[in-house]
Length: 283
Image (cartoon, rainbow, N blue to C red):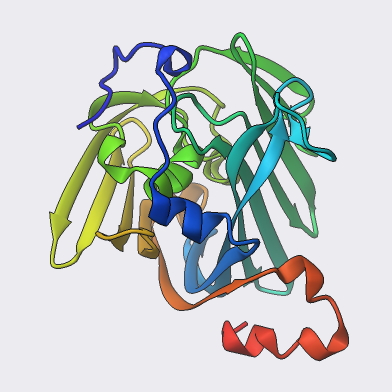
């Protein structure tokens, strides 16, 4: 099934062919938008909110590592995921967003990952670029986290798991794996950006796959449930870890459950008459 901890550099793997159903679904000039009812752990309490996963294919410039403005043979086709979470902590709101750019050929790690968190105390931002190593830049209003430049060996990224699921889930890493957890988790709990050992498991049952990542050192478990058939839509997820600090810390489980899904070119739907589409998504 998948690469173990001693997997070879993914850049050495040949591009994997795209199926016709994949081409028909992901190259129709539309994005897939899926909304979720969210219960987010923060400061030792569960907070109601909404999450949205927006998937779309687009051309990517490998050198500059940005979306291409023009067609070029050197462009790489990626499946981009913009993942958002919005919830309140008492009087003030949280807005969390991560973007992952993963090659549809499924033969190397994500080319780029960004993550940002905004709330009334300030905001934090992290960016990973896939070069000779993973080059990570982090910025924060916290003194201990601000303006860092980090080089990391290439290992699987939790952020890219969400796109790999949609392309070829049978090749997800399983067993004992060194993995870099999601940037939004690392920033929310103030953990170093580095690889951690995780036990990864993929199980198929009752029409769904369940992918589980268990990080013993972090006391954290992530469970992603998705359809067993293409396009492998993500139905729900759960994330369990200690939330809060000091005496307010307790082990809580963040949960997200699918509300609705929509295939549409949302970038063209920016008029006031298009606001009703949010009702379709339950937002």
